Image 1 (cartoon, one colour):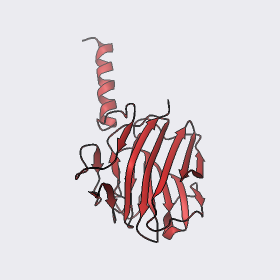
Image 2 (cartoon, helix red, strand yellow):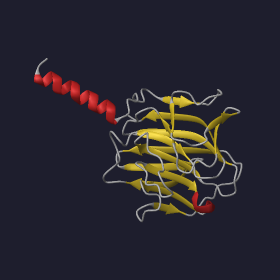
Image 3 (tube, one colour):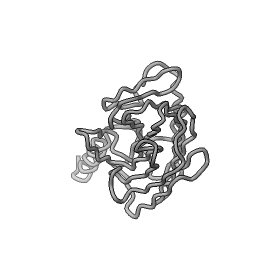
Image 4 (cartoon, helix red, strand yellow):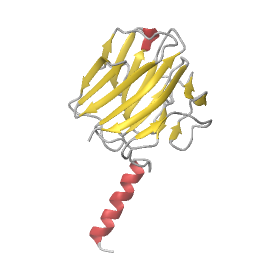
Length: 208
């Protein structure tokens, strides 16, 4: 094998290792959780995630995400239904993370954009670039999460812009001049701190 061919093989192998060997998203991905087990599409980093009555349930994961084993394209739309069974809200997602990270201690710095609906005892809605407590996060005080209400969440990234809607209302838009993308920033996850949450009807679609 020539030197050039060997270097090409090494590049492919290194790329697969850095991405955890997860396949690309493909034309689209959907999950309605109509089964009893999480299955091989998901990587659980230690949270109490389970499927109950056709929905994904979790409470008390303490920043141990449930990562989707698919690599996202740079521009993508994520839609999902979400519900909090607590007056404290705290519906949480990660997008464009490494597909493996989780909290090693009380303080957790993500590899992703962190999206939180009704965080901090239902007082703030946040998009954060990796650090949900950082000074550069975007914060909005409303709307508040209503206990037991099912919401339609949409996240969409195009270029440098990450936009977030709840029931077709634009909540926040983060414009990042250095977007998180490529190996290490190409996975989606459900996340949770303490509140009991339910998720259903996830769909992820490339935008180009």
